[in-house]
Image (cartoon, rainbow, N blue to C red; front, side):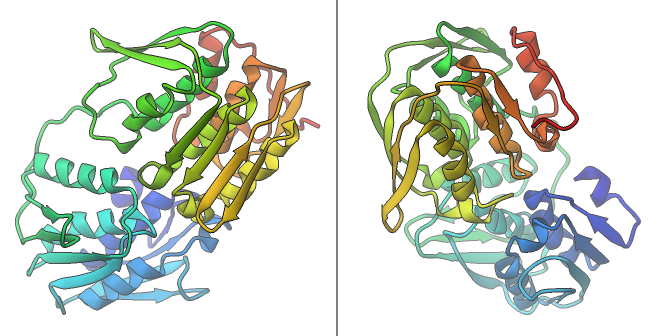
Length: 359
């Protein structure tokens, strides 16, 4: 992100980073820059229309260069704010909302966002507001009226501590849950994190992982697990690829909601999960719209996992290696969010071999 923000190039390639695409679209738009934003073939299939239409309503000139509603786009300037209020769906992606929130205080009139429908990933919206507060910007959020008000105001420099990434931490819950015995100590983990994925500690307790915070460390140990769980992933969709493979392999059935946004991620994550868990006889079905049922399977032999250019597929299924020899195709996808993942696995005792063309 920092490299692209400071780049003088006219064409910026975000590759497969959806968050970068959304945040840069808003930033480049309101800072009156003429830039082309593009990415991988998959990025060109990920919708951007809601954010682009919101920015156009503000007065930003943006063109689609290939397919309407999708990258690549070109930002072409912003000269006059046309409105101080926008209405945007709350259930599609919190990143659209966060992108608009972060540029709002720089607008001459500020911005009031009205969110429609069921709001997903609320903790991420609240985290955005909390981080903006640390840089001197006040956001007023009213969940009753589903509005976010941000008056025009300056950002101020601030010293902050970047928290450990709870999305990355979640994979170690997976290893702990599936290992025969386990005690893992993870350093520099805040119990009072702002991150929505902090809920993995609560989610994985019935799956068999106990969380203890002490001396600025998170210690994970095994405990008894249940035979069935229910969970709404509405506020933490990225955790689905951690939890579902673990439950599928551990014999835990599940009833899940809040998976809708997985369709528009790095891949269609629902289809990818269905395909890969089927290799152990597990099934993820949708008996009625928005309600998903997991029938677990059983690991009986070596398995090859396809990653579909998705970092979370690689890391979410990696804990299966506690049960069987596992081949992860395209392992370098982890570089998007956790480039040291394989090295960390090796550090706790896993034996890893890299093949150029695994069959």
